[in-house]
Structures are given as C-alpha cells and as structure tokens.
Length: 466
Image 1 (cartoon, rainbow, N blue to C red):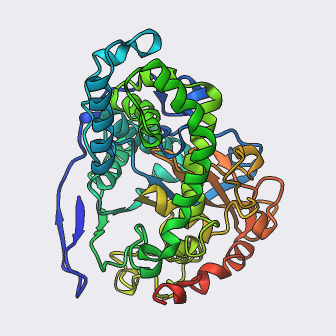
Image 2: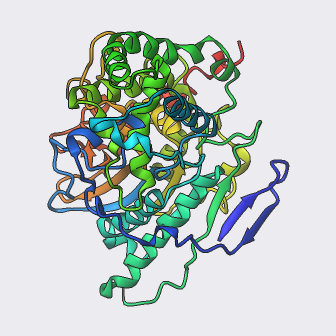
C-alpha cells in the first residue's frame, strides 16, 4: 500500500494497493543475500557509488553480543542498481557512437566494441537492482528475526520512482522471509505493507531528499566536489586516455570520454540480470579501478560530507527524526524537519521497534555526516589516492553503493542498565568514537544523543539562504 502525500497544506493522504514488481524474481548469480556482490571483488568493490552492495569487512563483529538483545532497529537504504541518469546515458551513447564512427579496427580486449550496441536506459532500476532490494528485505528479516517475527517495519520512501520501487521490493523480500520462517507461526496478513511516500518536488521539506537549502543547491558550495574531481582527473586519467587512444586509432577520446568508458563497466554489469562482469571492465587495471573509486569518493566527500561546509547540514533533519525514534520523544522542530509530517502519529509514529527508510546516495552521505559518523576521516587529498582503510573506513563504495544499507540499532544487555546504540553500515560496525564507543562499537543511548549537538542545533541551516 502506497500512502501518497498529495498536498503539503493539510496533507491530503490517499492510499492505493500496489504490489511490488516481480521483475527482480531471478536471483543474480554474482549476488547473494548474506554478502551481496561477490564477483571479481578486486574490481567490483572499487566502483564508488556504482558498486553493487557488498559486505564490508568489519574489525568489530557485527553479530549481536552475548547477553544482549536488539530492542530497536532503523534501516536507512539506498535504492538498488539503476541505469545511468538521462544526461549521462545520452553522453555515454554519444561516446560509443563516436568510437564506431571513427575507429576501423577493434582488436584484443577491445574487439567486443565492434558489435557493442548501447542499450542502457535512463534512471530506472535494473532487474539486478530490484533483486538487490528483495535480498535486502530478506536479510533485514533474518538479521532481526526476533523482532520481525511479530512486527513489520514502518516504511517511508523518498518520492523518486526508483526509490519507491526499491521500498516495494524490500517489502517483498521481508514478506517472503516471514512466510518462510516456520517459527513465526502465522500468515503475514499485514502485507502489502503501507509505504509513506514523501514527494521530491520543489519546496517539499523531505528529510530523505535534500533540496531546500538554497545556498547549497545553487551557491558556490556546489562546485567544491567538481573541482576536487577535476584535479584528481588530471592526475590519473591522462595515462589511461593515451592508452585507449593508442588502442583505438581515430577515436580521439577526451578526458570525459575516458571516464565515460570506465562508467560503462559498472552500468553494463548491473544491466545484466545475473550481474555478469562487463567486458568494459577488462580494459582497465586493478590499480586504475582504485583510482576510479577514489574519483567517486571525492565526489561524495566534497559534495555532501565533511569536505563541504553545508554538506552535513543536508542530513540534520533525518538525524533529528532518528533521535526522536530512539528516545520515543517528539521531533526537535528545526528548519530542516517537516513539522506537519513529524507531529502526526500516522505519518511519524513513535514507540515502534522497526523502521525502514529509502533514499539516495547523496542524502545518505549527508545524513552520515550529520550524525558524526566517519568524523575521524582527515580531509581527502585530490592529488594522492587515500584508500578506505586509511580514511577511517570512508569511501563511496564502502558507504553508499547501490542498495547500501545502514542499521541503527538499540540493544539491551544484561551488564548495562541503559540501552546501547550501535551503527552498522554495509555490515561494518562503526567504532562511534564521537560518543566514546566501547570495544564492540557501542555507546549508551544518552551518550549517543549527547554527541549529536550539530544535528540538534540544525547544523549550519542559518547559512542556507545567505
């Protein structure tokens, strides 16, 4: 059931039953529920935000500690793998047409280009991407089955079609896992689950999608990420560009064309229902994929994280909603939250034990930063690669790949009177240094909330309209 918000004055709320799509019914052979994408890891885990979801190695075990039980969990998820955006798909197609028009002979690893036809669409989930979210729903149920057997999550989705469809496919996986769990002892009569869809239209205050902070959207801060990427591009792309042009006489590929050909590796891979590695991927070395992954990491860090003065501010609204849910207290009404939604029990219920929200990579990056996650990451160099392990666990592929998911958990443990908080991003337990996390990555609830002054004071929202 989709609950659509059709008007922000009074919020006319309407509902219509809509079952999830079945396009994602074929299990991708390179993908699995437990660990995500596991084909050619030395390459596929370095595609930045275009990597398919995979389990990130964790120094802290992500299992529930002994003598503890999970009492609350919020998942924040990115949509599944998609086709390129409309502007990118036009650019990629133009690059391929340019190659076909100017190159007469295709040899070696480039031979496939002679018959390659550009068939990628624009903006929509691929079959592979749909299955990623079915798998995510299954994993969410299995991971938190002690709660999930008796409950269903309260679900919200940002209004972009691919995000809503991802939420639907997540419910499909959750529902199937519940039916398969003989211990649940009952049918899932609540299915299809209601999904609150928050529009992404201009002027809509949507904590799952940035758009209101004028100076961030249209001001000079918007150029910081592009400038950082341009500097790094001038370092790592020229040798690749020269090699491609030597192998494809007449192509005369530009820097932009070269990046486009690298992009076609992940996009053609996730266009395959089984996630078969694209032939484009073999055109580049493992070292070059590390460089490419860092190129995408710079975009996120300087676009929506600590490298941008207003980046983390875009996530303070969701952060305040998370505080409200964890403490079972009303949302702090700030400039970046939606008081109309957050003050109504139907659209923002408190006291629930399971929540699921669906959004985009940029918004998740901002939310992580508003919550103080990865706060030990030093400013990233735009001339020398910094791997995730040296960047406090920060990279685009480790944080916001396709179908990324963050779990915000509360747990009650026998040795602690107060509930503890833990954050798990793509199966990696974060150390939570901002609230003096223990050896298992946990803070007390009060310490976690106390560490969120940036969000509680609305970040730098006062600078949004300077």
